[in-house]
Amino acid sequence: MGKITTFEEAIDHIQSGMTVMIGGFFLAGCPFGLVKELTRRGGKLENISLISNDAASEFKMPHAYGNELIATGMVKKVTCAFIGHNHVAMKKIADGELELEMQPMGTFAERIRIGGAGIGGFLTPTGVGTPIAEGKPVINVDGVDYILEKPLKADVALIYGSVADENGNIYTTGVARNFNVDMATAAKYTVAEVRKIVKPGEIDPSMVTIPAPFIDAIVLAKEEDYLL
Amino acid sequence: MISNRERIALKVAQDIKDGEFVNFGHGIPYSVPPLIDKSKKVFFQNEPGVVCFGTYAPAEKGVYEMLDASNSYVCELPQGAFMSTSASFAMIRGGHVSKTVLGALQVDSHANIANWKTPGKPASGIGGAMDLCAGCPQVLVAMESTAKDGTPKMVETCTYPLTAAGRVTMVYTELGVFTVNPTEGFTLIERFPDYTVEEIIAKVAAPVKVSPDLKVIDLGIPLD
Image (tube, rainbow over all chains, first blue to last red; front, side):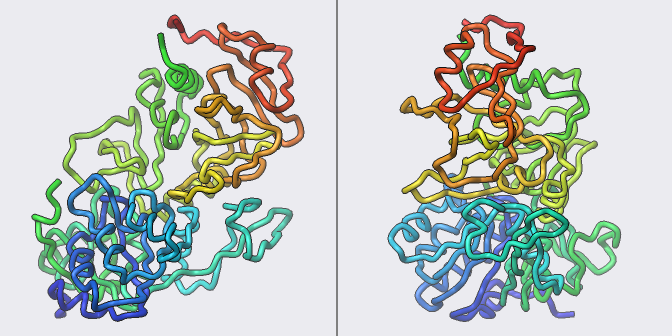
Protein backbone atom coordinates (compact mmCIF):
# COMPACT_ATOMS: atom_id res chain seq x y z
CA MET A 1 0.00 0.00 0.00
CA GLY A 2 2.95 2.29 0.60
CA LYS A 3 1.27 4.53 3.20
CA ILE A 4 4.14 4.27 5.68
CA THR A 5 6.40 7.28 5.34
CA THR A 6 8.79 9.56 7.23
CA PHE A 7 8.03 12.68 9.26
CA GLU A 8 9.97 14.76 6.72
CA GLU A 9 8.11 13.41 3.68
CA ALA A 10 4.73 13.76 5.40
CA ILE A 11 5.31 17.38 6.38
CA ASP A 12 6.62 18.15 2.86
CA HIS A 13 2.94 18.08 1.84
CA ILE A 14 2.37 21.31 3.75
CA GLN A 15 2.94 24.45 1.71
CA SER A 16 2.60 28.14 2.53
CA GLY A 17 -0.99 29.35 2.56
CA MET A 18 -2.44 25.95 3.44
CA THR A 19 -4.94 25.09 6.17
CA VAL A 20 -3.64 22.50 8.62
CA MET A 21 -5.59 20.56 11.25
CA ILE A 22 -3.80 19.18 14.30
CA GLY A 23 -5.58 16.59 16.43
CA GLY A 24 -5.47 16.25 20.18
CA PHE A 25 -7.13 17.61 23.26
CA PHE A 26 -4.30 19.19 25.23
CA LEU A 27 -1.78 16.35 25.49
CA ALA A 28 -4.23 13.53 24.79
CA GLY A 29 -3.95 12.36 21.20
CA CYS A 30 -1.65 15.12 19.97
CA PRO A 31 0.79 13.96 17.25
CA PHE A 32 3.90 15.42 18.91
CA GLY A 33 6.40 14.23 16.31
CA LEU A 34 4.49 15.73 13.40
CA VAL A 35 4.02 19.05 15.21
CA LYS A 36 7.74 19.05 16.02
CA GLU A 37 8.63 18.43 12.35
CA LEU A 38 6.24 21.18 11.22
CA THR A 39 7.85 23.53 13.74
CA ARG A 40 11.25 22.77 12.17
CA ARG A 41 9.94 24.33 8.94
CA GLY A 42 9.84 27.72 10.65
CA GLY A 43 11.21 30.38 8.30
CA LYS A 44 10.28 28.32 5.21
CA LEU A 45 6.48 28.29 5.60
CA GLU A 46 4.11 31.22 6.02
CA ASN A 47 0.40 32.10 6.04
CA ILE A 48 -0.63 28.76 7.58
CA SER A 49 -4.17 28.61 8.92
CA LEU A 50 -4.21 26.31 11.96
CA ILE A 51 -7.29 24.40 13.11
CA SER A 52 -6.64 22.83 16.51
CA ASN A 53 -8.78 22.57 19.64
CA ASP A 54 -6.19 24.23 21.90
CA ALA A 55 -3.45 25.28 19.43
CA ALA A 56 -1.64 22.00 20.16
CA SER A 57 -0.37 23.38 23.38
CA GLU A 58 0.11 22.56 27.01
CA PHE A 59 2.19 24.89 29.08
CA LYS A 60 3.37 22.44 31.71
CA MET A 61 4.70 19.74 29.45
CA PRO A 62 7.98 19.38 27.58
CA HIS A 63 6.70 17.63 24.48
CA ALA A 64 4.04 20.02 23.30
CA TYR A 65 5.29 22.14 20.45
CA GLY A 66 2.29 24.42 20.04
CA ASN A 67 4.08 27.38 21.61
CA GLU A 68 7.13 26.84 19.41
CA LEU A 69 4.95 26.35 16.33
CA ILE A 70 3.21 29.69 16.88
CA ALA A 71 6.56 31.33 17.73
CA THR A 72 7.91 30.48 14.25
CA GLY A 73 5.44 33.01 12.83
CA MET A 74 4.26 30.63 10.11
CA VAL A 75 0.71 30.61 11.49
CA LYS A 76 -1.46 33.58 10.49
CA LYS A 77 -4.77 32.34 11.91
CA VAL A 78 -5.86 29.92 14.64
CA THR A 79 -9.33 28.39 14.78
CA CYS A 80 -9.84 26.76 18.18
CA ALA A 81 -12.03 26.37 21.26
CA PHE A 82 -9.35 27.15 23.82
CA ILE A 83 -6.07 29.05 23.56
CA GLY A 84 -5.17 29.96 27.16
CA HIS A 85 -2.37 27.41 27.50
CA ASN A 86 -0.55 28.76 24.45
CA HIS A 87 1.04 31.89 25.89
CA VAL A 88 2.92 32.68 22.69
CA ALA A 89 -0.37 32.72 20.78
CA MET A 90 -2.05 34.85 23.48
CA LYS A 91 0.70 37.46 23.16
CA LYS A 92 0.64 37.44 19.36
CA ILE A 93 -3.15 37.86 19.38
CA ALA A 94 -2.85 40.79 21.83
CA ASP A 95 -0.18 42.31 19.58
CA GLY A 96 -2.37 41.91 16.47
CA GLU A 97 0.05 39.46 14.86
CA LEU A 98 -2.25 36.44 14.92
CA GLU A 99 -5.87 36.14 13.85
CA LEU A 100 -8.14 34.16 16.19
CA GLU A 101 -11.45 32.43 15.57
CA MET A 102 -12.70 31.19 18.94
CA GLN A 103 -15.49 28.64 18.88
CA PRO A 104 -17.65 26.76 21.37
CA MET A 105 -16.02 23.33 21.51
CA GLY A 106 -19.07 21.39 20.32
CA THR A 107 -19.48 23.76 17.38
CA PHE A 108 -15.78 23.40 16.57
CA ALA A 109 -16.02 19.58 16.68
CA GLU A 110 -19.20 19.44 14.62
CA ARG A 111 -17.86 21.84 11.96
CA ILE A 112 -14.96 19.42 11.45
CA ARG A 113 -17.28 16.41 11.41
CA ILE A 114 -19.54 17.91 8.72
CA GLY A 115 -16.47 19.15 6.82
CA GLY A 116 -15.49 15.55 6.34
CA ALA A 117 -19.04 14.33 5.78
CA GLY A 118 -19.92 16.45 2.77
CA ILE A 119 -22.48 18.56 4.64
CA GLY A 120 -22.74 22.27 3.88
CA GLY A 121 -23.67 23.56 7.34
CA PHE A 122 -25.53 22.73 10.52
CA LEU A 123 -27.95 24.48 12.84
CA THR A 124 -26.98 24.63 16.50
CA PRO A 125 -28.68 26.17 19.53
CA THR A 126 -25.23 26.71 21.07
CA GLY A 127 -24.32 30.38 21.34
CA VAL A 128 -27.73 31.86 20.48
CA GLY A 129 -27.97 35.25 22.23
CA THR A 130 -24.20 35.45 22.77
CA PRO A 131 -21.38 37.20 20.88
CA ILE A 132 -20.76 33.93 18.98
CA ALA A 133 -23.95 34.52 16.99
CA GLU A 134 -22.82 37.93 15.70
CA GLY A 135 -22.59 38.06 11.92
CA LYS A 136 -24.05 34.58 11.48
CA PRO A 137 -27.53 33.69 10.17
CA VAL A 138 -29.96 32.75 12.96
CA ILE A 139 -32.68 30.44 11.66
CA ASN A 140 -35.89 29.58 13.51
CA VAL A 141 -37.04 25.99 13.14
CA ASP A 142 -40.33 25.02 14.82
CA GLY A 143 -40.03 27.88 17.29
CA VAL A 144 -36.38 27.37 18.26
CA ASP A 145 -33.53 29.66 17.17
CA TYR A 146 -30.39 28.07 15.77
CA ILE A 147 -27.12 29.51 14.46
CA LEU A 148 -25.99 28.41 11.01
CA GLU A 149 -22.42 27.14 11.28
CA LYS A 150 -20.36 26.18 8.24
CA PRO A 151 -17.99 23.24 7.78
CA LEU A 152 -14.25 23.29 8.50
CA LYS A 153 -11.93 21.56 6.04
CA ALA A 154 -8.16 21.39 5.66
CA ASP A 155 -5.46 20.71 3.11
CA VAL A 156 -3.54 18.55 5.56
CA ALA A 157 -4.56 16.90 8.86
CA LEU A 158 -1.94 15.74 11.36
CA ILE A 159 -3.55 13.16 13.61
CA TYR A 160 -2.66 10.62 16.30
CA GLY A 161 -3.48 6.92 16.60
CA SER A 162 -2.42 4.15 18.97
CA VAL A 163 -2.03 1.34 16.43
CA ALA A 164 -2.23 1.33 12.61
CA ASP A 165 -2.13 -1.58 10.24
CA GLU A 166 -0.12 -1.15 7.06
CA ASN A 167 -3.31 -0.39 5.12
CA GLY A 168 -4.09 2.55 7.39
CA ASN A 169 -6.82 1.16 9.65
CA ILE A 170 -6.36 2.80 13.03
CA TYR A 171 -7.25 1.79 16.56
CA THR A 172 -7.00 4.45 19.24
CA THR A 173 -7.36 3.99 22.97
CA GLY A 174 -8.96 6.25 25.54
CA VAL A 175 -9.56 9.95 25.21
CA ALA A 176 -6.94 10.17 22.44
CA ARG A 177 -9.52 9.59 19.73
CA ASN A 178 -10.99 13.08 20.45
CA PHE A 179 -10.76 15.31 17.33
CA ASN A 180 -8.50 12.88 15.45
CA VAL A 181 -11.43 10.76 14.27
CA ASP A 182 -13.18 13.63 12.50
CA MET A 183 -10.08 15.53 11.36
CA ALA A 184 -9.00 12.37 9.49
CA THR A 185 -12.09 12.76 7.31
CA ALA A 186 -11.91 16.53 6.77
CA ALA A 187 -8.55 16.96 5.00
CA LYS A 188 -7.28 16.28 1.50
CA TYR A 189 -4.18 14.62 2.95
CA THR A 190 -4.27 12.96 6.37
CA VAL A 191 -1.14 11.76 8.16
CA ALA A 192 -1.47 9.57 11.23
CA GLU A 193 1.35 9.37 13.77
CA VAL A 194 0.97 6.05 15.56
CA ARG A 195 2.75 4.27 18.41
CA LYS A 196 2.75 0.88 16.69
CA ILE A 197 2.35 -0.46 13.14
CA VAL A 198 1.03 -3.99 12.58
CA LYS A 199 0.28 -6.26 9.60
CA PRO A 200 -3.12 -5.95 7.88
CA GLY A 201 -5.64 -8.15 9.68
CA GLU A 202 -4.04 -7.79 13.09
CA ILE A 203 -6.59 -5.16 14.19
CA ASP A 204 -10.05 -6.64 14.74
CA PRO A 205 -12.24 -4.81 12.15
CA SER A 206 -14.83 -4.20 14.87
CA MET A 207 -12.25 -2.26 16.87
CA VAL A 208 -11.11 0.10 14.09
CA THR A 209 -11.52 3.73 15.18
CA ILE A 210 -10.61 5.28 11.80
CA PRO A 211 -11.03 3.19 8.62
CA ALA A 212 -8.10 3.06 6.20
CA PRO A 213 -9.67 5.06 3.33
CA PHE A 214 -9.45 8.23 5.46
CA ILE A 215 -5.70 7.80 5.99
CA ASP A 216 -3.15 8.83 3.33
CA ALA A 217 0.09 8.34 5.26
CA ILE A 218 1.35 6.70 8.44
CA VAL A 219 4.42 7.61 10.47
CA LEU A 220 5.74 5.63 13.41
CA ALA A 221 6.03 7.79 16.54
CA LYS A 222 9.36 8.12 18.31
CA GLU A 223 8.81 7.07 21.91
CA GLU A 224 11.12 9.81 23.18
CA ASP A 225 8.55 12.32 21.96
CA TYR A 226 5.99 10.82 24.34
CA LEU A 227 7.92 10.71 27.63
CA LEU A 228 6.17 12.64 30.37
CA MET B 1 -13.33 26.00 59.33
CA ILE B 2 -14.27 25.08 55.80
CA SER B 3 -13.85 27.63 53.03
CA ASN B 4 -16.66 29.15 50.99
CA ARG B 5 -15.59 27.09 48.02
CA GLU B 6 -15.63 23.87 50.06
CA ARG B 7 -19.10 24.48 51.46
CA ILE B 8 -20.47 25.21 47.98
CA ALA B 9 -18.91 22.02 46.60
CA LEU B 10 -20.21 19.98 49.56
CA LYS B 11 -23.74 21.31 49.05
CA VAL B 12 -23.69 20.52 45.32
CA ALA B 13 -22.40 17.01 46.14
CA GLN B 14 -25.20 16.54 48.67
CA ASP B 15 -27.81 17.41 46.03
CA ILE B 16 -26.48 15.13 43.26
CA LYS B 17 -28.94 12.26 42.99
CA ASP B 18 -28.36 8.56 42.58
CA GLY B 19 -28.18 7.60 38.90
CA GLU B 20 -27.62 11.12 37.54
CA PHE B 21 -25.45 11.77 34.46
CA VAL B 22 -23.42 14.92 35.13
CA ASN B 23 -20.70 17.07 33.55
CA PHE B 24 -18.64 19.14 36.01
CA GLY B 25 -16.87 22.26 34.73
CA HIS B 26 -13.67 23.93 35.90
CA GLY B 27 -13.29 25.60 39.28
CA ILE B 28 -15.52 24.74 42.23
CA PRO B 29 -17.55 22.18 40.21
CA TYR B 30 -14.45 20.12 39.50
CA SER B 31 -13.92 19.56 43.23
CA VAL B 32 -17.41 18.06 43.66
CA PRO B 33 -17.06 14.44 42.39
CA PRO B 34 -14.84 13.12 45.25
CA LEU B 35 -17.32 14.62 47.75
CA ILE B 36 -20.34 12.69 46.46
CA ASP B 37 -21.50 9.98 48.86
CA LYS B 38 -20.23 6.61 47.67
CA SER B 39 -23.69 5.07 48.06
CA LYS B 40 -24.82 7.06 44.99
CA LYS B 41 -24.00 5.73 41.54
CA VAL B 42 -23.25 8.72 39.33
CA PHE B 43 -22.14 8.80 35.69
CA PHE B 44 -19.61 11.49 34.83
CA GLN B 45 -19.35 12.99 31.35
CA ASN B 46 -16.28 14.83 30.15
CA GLU B 47 -15.88 16.89 26.99
CA PRO B 48 -13.02 15.15 25.09
CA GLY B 49 -15.19 12.04 24.92
CA VAL B 50 -15.40 9.97 28.08
CA VAL B 51 -18.12 8.59 30.28
CA CYS B 52 -17.06 7.10 33.58
CA PHE B 53 -19.16 5.26 36.08
CA GLY B 54 -18.58 5.81 39.78
CA THR B 55 -16.07 8.11 41.43
CA TYR B 56 -14.11 10.26 39.05
CA ALA B 57 -10.65 10.12 40.53
CA PRO B 58 -7.14 10.62 39.13
CA ALA B 59 -5.77 7.42 37.64
CA GLU B 60 -2.12 6.40 37.61
CA LYS B 61 -0.15 9.13 35.88
CA GLY B 62 1.76 8.61 32.71
CA VAL B 63 -0.73 7.97 29.92
CA TYR B 64 -1.52 10.88 27.62
CA GLU B 65 -4.50 8.96 26.29
CA MET B 66 -6.31 9.25 29.64
CA LEU B 67 -6.46 13.00 30.18
CA ASP B 68 -9.70 14.89 30.67
CA ALA B 69 -10.72 18.44 29.77
CA SER B 70 -9.08 19.77 32.93
CA ASN B 71 -5.86 17.96 32.09
CA SER B 72 -6.34 15.49 34.92
CA TYR B 73 -6.03 11.75 34.47
CA VAL B 74 -9.25 9.79 34.28
CA CYS B 75 -9.91 6.24 35.40
CA GLU B 76 -10.44 3.55 32.84
CA LEU B 77 -13.32 1.89 34.59
CA PRO B 78 -14.92 -1.24 33.15
CA GLN B 79 -18.27 0.54 33.08
CA GLY B 80 -16.99 3.60 31.19
CA ALA B 81 -16.96 4.47 27.51
CA PHE B 82 -14.87 6.55 25.15
CA MET B 83 -16.04 8.38 22.04
CA SER B 84 -14.92 11.08 19.63
CA THR B 85 -15.31 14.70 20.74
CA SER B 86 -18.05 15.30 18.15
CA ALA B 87 -19.98 12.35 19.62
CA SER B 88 -19.30 13.69 23.12
CA PHE B 89 -20.91 16.98 22.14
CA ALA B 90 -23.81 15.19 20.45
CA MET B 91 -24.36 13.73 23.92
CA ILE B 92 -24.12 17.21 25.48
CA ARG B 93 -25.99 19.29 22.90
CA GLY B 94 -28.60 16.60 22.36
CA GLY B 95 -29.74 16.78 25.98
CA HIS B 96 -28.48 13.33 27.00
CA VAL B 97 -26.40 14.72 29.88
CA SER B 98 -29.00 15.51 32.53
CA LYS B 99 -27.06 18.09 34.49
CA THR B 100 -24.04 20.36 34.20
CA VAL B 101 -22.39 22.25 37.05
CA LEU B 102 -20.41 25.32 35.94
CA GLY B 103 -18.49 28.16 37.47
CA ALA B 104 -19.48 31.70 36.45
CA LEU B 105 -18.37 35.32 36.42
CA GLN B 106 -21.99 36.56 36.47
CA VAL B 107 -25.50 35.10 36.58
CA ASP B 108 -28.57 37.30 36.14
CA SER B 109 -32.32 37.47 36.80
CA HIS B 110 -33.02 36.38 33.21
CA ALA B 111 -31.21 33.06 33.85
CA ASN B 112 -28.31 34.26 31.70
CA ILE B 113 -24.76 33.15 32.46
CA ALA B 114 -21.44 34.81 31.62
CA ASN B 115 -18.37 32.70 32.30
CA TRP B 116 -15.90 32.89 29.41
CA LYS B 117 -14.71 36.44 29.00
CA THR B 118 -13.96 39.45 31.16
CA PRO B 119 -14.45 42.66 29.14
CA GLY B 120 -11.16 44.21 28.09
CA LYS B 121 -9.15 41.03 28.59
CA PRO B 122 -8.39 38.38 25.97
CA ALA B 123 -10.46 35.22 26.49
CA SER B 124 -8.46 32.08 27.11
CA GLY B 125 -11.21 29.93 25.68
CA ILE B 126 -14.88 29.05 25.45
CA GLY B 127 -14.43 25.30 25.87
CA GLY B 128 -17.59 23.27 26.30
CA ALA B 129 -19.59 25.73 28.43
CA MET B 130 -21.81 27.16 25.67
CA ASP B 131 -22.76 23.68 24.44
CA LEU B 132 -23.36 22.41 27.97
CA CYS B 133 -25.70 25.34 28.66
CA ALA B 134 -27.50 24.90 25.34
CA GLY B 135 -28.06 21.17 25.78
CA CYS B 136 -28.31 20.17 29.43
CA PRO B 137 -31.82 20.29 30.92
CA GLN B 138 -30.38 21.37 34.28
CA VAL B 139 -27.69 24.06 34.35
CA LEU B 140 -26.31 24.60 37.86
CA VAL B 141 -23.93 27.42 38.64
CA ALA B 142 -21.58 26.90 41.60
CA MET B 143 -19.71 30.08 42.51
CA GLU B 144 -18.92 32.47 45.34
CA SER B 145 -21.52 35.24 45.53
CA THR B 146 -18.98 38.01 44.97
CA ALA B 147 -15.85 38.53 42.88
CA LYS B 148 -12.48 38.94 44.64
CA ASP B 149 -13.05 42.72 44.82
CA GLY B 150 -16.42 42.22 46.53
CA THR B 151 -18.57 42.95 43.45
CA PRO B 152 -21.78 40.86 43.44
CA LYS B 153 -21.84 38.12 40.79
CA MET B 154 -25.62 37.61 40.99
CA VAL B 155 -26.97 40.63 39.08
CA GLU B 156 -30.09 41.94 37.38
CA THR B 157 -28.52 41.93 33.91
CA CYS B 158 -25.11 40.49 33.00
CA THR B 159 -22.61 43.08 31.79
CA TYR B 160 -20.05 40.47 30.67
CA PRO B 161 -20.35 38.64 27.32
CA LEU B 162 -22.90 35.84 27.68
CA THR B 163 -22.21 32.12 27.59
CA ALA B 164 -25.91 31.32 27.22
CA ALA B 165 -29.22 33.17 27.44
CA GLY B 166 -32.00 31.98 29.74
CA ARG B 167 -30.54 28.54 30.44
CA VAL B 168 -29.45 28.59 34.11
CA THR B 169 -31.77 26.69 36.46
CA MET B 170 -30.03 26.87 39.88
CA VAL B 171 -27.32 28.90 41.60
CA TYR B 172 -25.22 27.56 44.51
CA THR B 173 -23.23 30.09 46.55
CA GLU B 174 -21.80 30.32 50.06
CA LEU B 175 -25.04 32.14 51.02
CA GLY B 176 -27.45 29.46 49.92
CA VAL B 177 -29.22 27.90 46.95
CA PHE B 178 -31.39 29.80 44.46
CA THR B 179 -33.61 28.77 41.60
CA VAL B 180 -33.67 31.10 38.62
CA ASN B 181 -35.73 31.37 35.45
CA PRO B 182 -36.41 34.19 32.99
CA THR B 183 -39.92 34.93 34.29
CA GLU B 184 -39.43 34.59 38.07
CA GLY B 185 -35.82 35.72 38.47
CA PHE B 186 -33.98 34.47 41.59
CA THR B 187 -35.78 32.62 44.38
CA LEU B 188 -33.92 31.67 47.55
CA ILE B 189 -34.88 28.07 48.41
CA GLU B 190 -32.18 27.12 50.92
CA ARG B 191 -29.87 29.21 53.08
CA PHE B 192 -26.72 28.40 55.01
CA PRO B 193 -27.40 28.81 58.75
CA ASP B 194 -24.78 31.55 59.25
CA TYR B 195 -26.59 34.01 56.94
CA THR B 196 -29.98 35.56 57.56
CA VAL B 197 -32.40 36.12 54.70
CA GLU B 198 -31.81 39.86 55.00
CA GLU B 199 -28.03 39.43 54.77
CA ILE B 200 -28.41 37.23 51.71
CA ILE B 201 -30.72 39.64 49.91
CA ALA B 202 -28.25 42.46 50.62
CA LYS B 203 -25.45 40.55 48.88
CA VAL B 204 -27.38 39.97 45.64
CA ALA B 205 -27.51 42.83 43.14
CA ALA B 206 -30.92 41.74 41.82
CA PRO B 207 -34.41 41.16 43.22
CA VAL B 208 -34.62 37.95 45.28
CA LYS B 209 -37.85 36.15 46.13
CA VAL B 210 -37.87 33.91 49.17
CA SER B 211 -39.49 30.51 48.90
CA PRO B 212 -42.30 29.89 51.40
CA ASP B 213 -40.61 26.51 51.98
CA LEU B 214 -37.19 28.04 52.67
CA LYS B 215 -34.91 25.42 54.21
CA VAL B 216 -31.76 25.76 56.29
CA ILE B 217 -28.84 23.78 54.87
CA ASP B 218 -27.33 21.03 57.03
CA LEU B 219 -24.10 19.64 55.57
CA GLY B 220 -23.75 17.26 58.52
CA ILE B 221 -20.49 18.90 59.55
CA PRO B 222 -19.75 22.11 61.46
CA LEU B 223 -19.26 25.14 59.20
CA ASP B 224 -16.83 26.87 61.58
